[in-house]
Length: 111
Length: 108
Image 1 (spheres, chains in turn purple, cyan):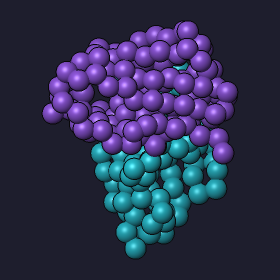
Image 2 (cartoon, rainbow over the protein chains, first blue to last red):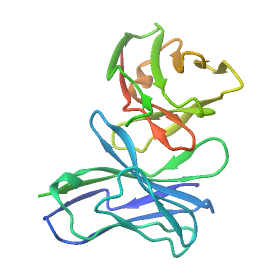
Image 3 (cartoon, rainbow over the protein chains, first blue to last red):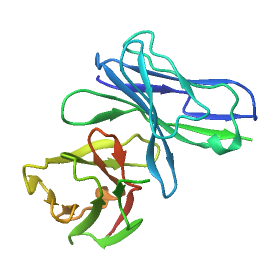
Image 4 (cartoon, each protein chain N blue to C red):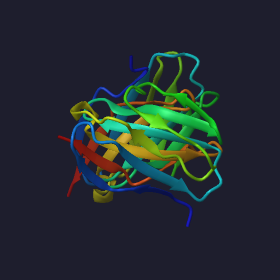
């Protein structure tokens, strides 16, 4: 089954403790992206990757890092999480005109 | 600065009636638009799209209308069903702009 898999689904952490949210896709898509969803703001792009070793900032990249060492994986790294990064995160990959395939989301709470 | 806007955060409609969701955009360079549907605890899924060379695209109960001069598109769901209760996002393809979403509740 074609899918985008994110882990974990839920995460509660403390301010400043580094964390990684993993994302993997099995569709051989070149383009992958991370979004955060906040009430009233919709989906905002954090980072995207056009291909292996090619990443670029989206609209809200501050406080996040990504890497793309292989085509299928695109982890999101929070080096020093802060409470304003409490959000619902989605990973997505894309090919063709039908837009993104999204993962099921990761709900992150930073206390 | 949001370039894709959905100004109605919520919509309640009776089963069998028409749901109309609206979306406005500011960038006249946008040439392709998509609607996504999102259920709780799931990621958004693609619903329907439209290219700027068209003014209407239909897929079953779902029709999207595009008015380029007004920079406005709308999604019509006819007839609405309880399973249509979800959040709907309007999006413009590359650049990757999404609206804030409209929560649709279809009541029996």
